[in-house]
Image (cartoon, rainbow, N blue to C red; front, side, top):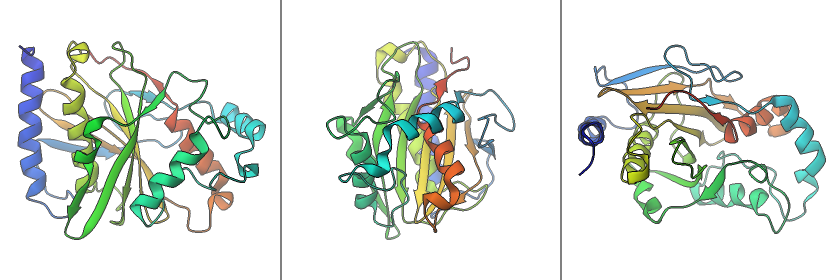
Amino acid sequence: MEPKHVLETLNFIKEAFELTYKSRDYYECKSELIEVSDLDFNSGEPGDGEQFIRPFSYSRMHQFLEEIRPWDNPDGCPSILPIDTAVDDAAQARDRPMEHDQMPGIIEGTKWKLLIPEESHLLFRLSHHTPWNVENFIDQCDYEKPHMGCYLANNLPLKEIVPSISETQTILWVTGSRFMDEGYQNHKVVPVTFLSGSGSSVRVVGGYIDRKKLYIRLTPIVDFVEGEKKKWNEFVQYLCWIVGDPIGNTT
């Protein structure tokens, strides 16, 4: 039998899903069930509430990139961010620079692990002819840290301070999936942090459920239409988010 707080969260997820189905592509309606706020791109500090991910050191990440020089790898891709127009191509582009048989990836050497749950196909939706896909989950596989990360690739354009339905449902699904594992049921909060990309635009989305309310936090959108080299600082900062430190009180 699941603990009371887990049952309450799962029931809330069902209710929140029904609310998102009433919207089209973006969640713009007002509800006491969902609160949207800003998220600082550099520090990871939210506009309100507790912080759950501290981005990796920018200087250390920059040094690491200079050491592994992924741009010199002939089999690699110029980008590991979900910014491709085609969802399937985005997934392939993210995979290559992280494969250990080709070159050291940014995940290697950290406590994070890449994994694709068997249920990952449930995160594919075709709504109003707008495909989106979530894969390449990032998990520390530590029952003391329920935090999870992932990548969301979406053909729907991003809107500042407005979450898309795919972003909202991703948080709900990942939280529910996590609570199905008994090892994490002592936690009351499951922080979900992911890169959300559409076309050449990317942002970080953080979310969690607490006391029957969904909190969604959004960083400003960065457009890489001219490529990563034109906005190299921002590109490196996104990598810092991928391997950030899980923090905060989740129990």
